[in-house]
Image (cartoon, rainbow, N blue to C red):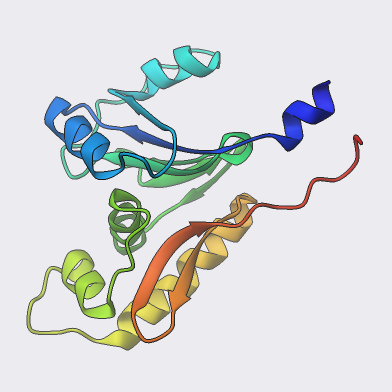
Length: 174
């Protein structure tokens, strides 16, 4: 029966933000997309998933901490520490990498144009250089791969980029 449970894992979106208004906005935005878990902080998330309790710094007011992944390889973005974590692996993120990943996770089913991503990450309406975004995406893809999560950034030909989760094949156990 344990093997059947592992095969039946489902995609789950988790959003961690201290703002009740942001949790409501995310619930409305993601209604019907996938199961959604909304929590105020990492301590609450740890309690829900049965992980050991650790004190964390206060959440950043910059942006909600967001998660997009499957239950077995959840990607956590810590805005306070500017890190991404999956299981016991962690990578540091530059400000630009953090802002791009956070932007993509705020609307995980949306395809973002290069111009929209440039404005969101660099906060510059005049410059919209595609090469800047492509270079940043390349570095971020490498870091996501280091974490061992199935979450990556996919190009949608002629449109832009989106965050997606590619399930890894299961090895062993029936």
